[in-house]
Length: 280
Image (cartoon, rainbow, N blue to C red):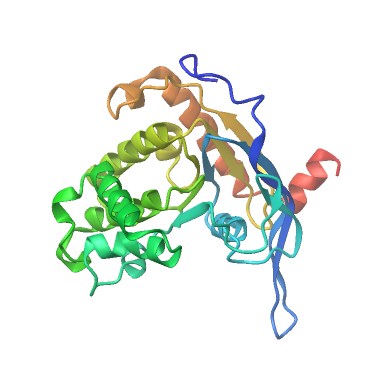
């Protein structure tokens, strides 16, 4: 627990993942079990990072939670209600942000689009869009088009669109993987700032160990496919973080090493092996 923040341990979970299993069926009968018996909960307002080896089922997990992919079995709940389709109180930001933006629409129009779909009144839409663009530092680019912006700025547009929707839960699937190191650092700080300002619950998938430690209050480590939770690490760093001081802190190095070692172990451990190891 961060000493500067109240504990969330007693908070009712906003998200429940219980015994989630996902099997991809094949016409040839060669079914692939991607996720096996995945179980964890997320308290309201927490920022959680998900890490694991390549192919560990991280994206599959997020798509199931987002209601974009039906699970084979298990229970998914948002605020006590079963997730059977895309929840109205949830927003998703994917890695391929360029494909999610319409190049013929202005930045402002791209951010406004989900609000139009939700039939938010026009005056409120304009206010939300303006606030979201200001939050991500793009007020000056409202009339520009995505193709006129850098990759980092395009990702800010995608984040602004999610923020304008005012979700209770924000899912992010390796959203900074395609940008340069400096832009990535700026976007990490942007996410923490938005998280604190809006009080939104964030589930953030990343392959970058340092990023997970810097961003999160908690890091969940997954095994190789078929996937289960291998470790659940509390990130007990100060609430106020910056790229230089935080990353050079001794505790940051300890946490980074622990998660790195767990991921190395995860590369050779499937869900089936974890089950055997735990006696299940």
